[in-house]
Image 1 (spheres, rainbow, N blue to C red):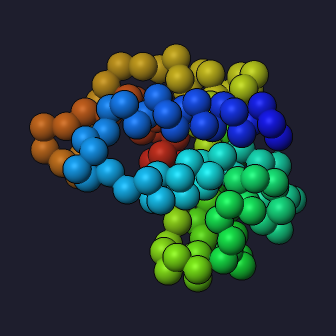
Image 2 (image 1 turned 45 degrees about the vertical axis):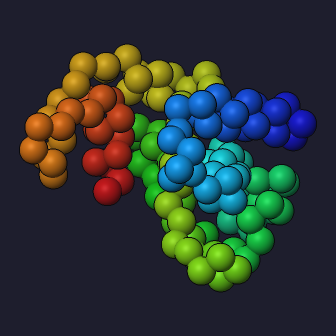
Image 3 (image 1 turned 180 degrees about the horizontal axis):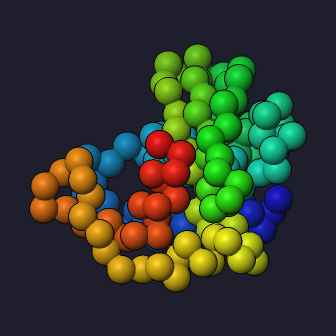
Length: 133
């Protein structure tokens, strides 16, 4: 878990550089980072919220509802955190060496995001998202 923790912290620090500090809340950013990390945990430990640091850093979780499309290997979860009084939706990104995830990533052209006029989104991501929306 040390490597995962380092990777999460590195990703967090890198993303902070692009954030306008006036609107930035470190507590929310840290919670979000750990929720994102939990989306990479195996399903039994995620379901029990026992997946190490990503779970222990966000106490207050009692039930996980998985979001998944096995065909596209799209995975995430929805939960409620009673400690912070927040509904959480977190998705896993690319799943390492998983062929299906990489095939989704390869489809990289942009398509119109139908809910907001004049916006575009990565077509592979949009297909994966739309399959579980």
